[in-house]
Image (cartoon, rainbow, N blue to C red; front, top):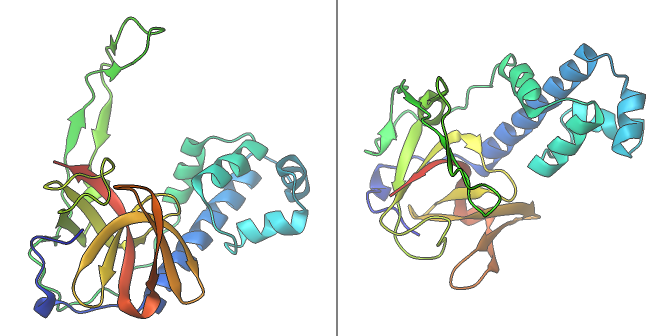
Length: 240
């Protein structure tokens, strides 16, 4: 998929090495949050590792930020110390992010230069299936804060093509931020050095190749040489 509002001439690109630095910083932050949470709950590394089913040295690598934190893996790590994702996110919020060295000359019109702060109330939860005849439950008082989806540097990408259907549809849009690297198994915006964009499911890096998955018309693995890629970023919001 390509951006419908991108201007390649106005772009300034960041090397993949910078993106790798951001990913390493993200792992270190998560490792520190895991360590702080474990200590707060009074669990030793040895006990946590035994519950996790790995060696103490393997557990230490996670706390040192030297292992990748996929969502299923993080859930298993937290279960090993009887902690919740909310508790982990709270510890993570106390660890400052490393500011990314974003290009100052970028003039992409879809860039949101200032944080947008607004909240939307949640009016209910819809349930599907025969086991839930009451398909709408009132949830008074709950509010979702959307500011985190529009932090400084956030950009909007208009979509064309069917390669990510039904995950993302042509004519819609996604938000992304170059400060937020893609996560394994999640949707990602791929910025190419030639000024183009693609939206795929990020899988992994393998040597000098970026490995992603295209979903339509059939699921297939794609490989991009890293020397053609400017960056790979996590998708924030999707919309029509």
